[in-house]
Image (cartoon, rainbow, N blue to C red; front, side, top):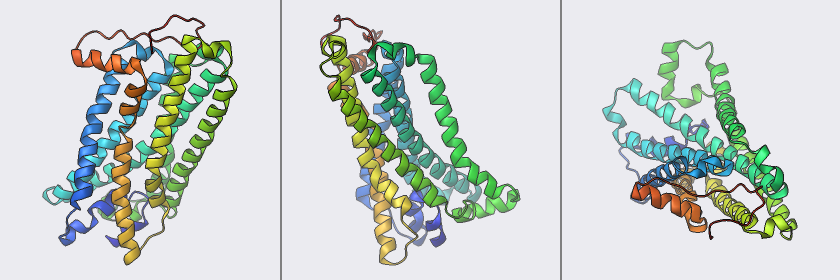
Length: 331
């Protein structure tokens, strides 16, 4: 199993690698990871339900937030799958254990890339709302947002699957299944650096975009459309989004650093294994940050959550940022 450290899809392998030698998962990361994952699943299901069942689903930003919650939900499910597979894989047939292993690792990395891409989409949405509030409604339509989300998912899956398909296109099925035991034989040389650089590039682009949003945020602060009630709501939503994304980027850093580290042996291997444990826990915590920050700073989310808990029809008022009116619900 040592050669698996060369693979880009090896984060979950560092978690499980030593179990075959009789080792156990450290209790601290195990408890933190499972607790965070369970909380994330419940919180993201609540957020998705609240947005879909209320008038929040008429606003492009909140649709993108729901998509972000979908990504976070998959991250949490994969975290639980990692630990469960690690502990009980010896009870499964070898072929099924290998299929689950590959699906677990591929899904985890794909979803994180999609999550970073979705953060960019939210940033573009809020940038338009900030600099062109009167054109925002006509530009950021629901139809365009749904199409963009779909294209992003397809693009990320295609980019990450293409090297796998090309590298294994001439491999016989029996040989491919056997070699699933060593992920380095399935993924091409240099793929770890590719995935790491892709994630790092998305993180840097997010940082630049949200910095530009904050600059534009300050420049338009004196405009009439920014000081009325609707403009203030839009500005608060923009700042809330920025806070969520910044926390997410910070929590993703250990994961990206881990991916870009070269294969390690000896003491360096021990350090890298500990980094894998930390990275998995942090990305799981990152998966429910938005479910805490949005309701804390946005009354519309608190109202939508309350309606879900009370099982009554949700009727949260959402006014587009481009609408020039002072009628709104109190913040």
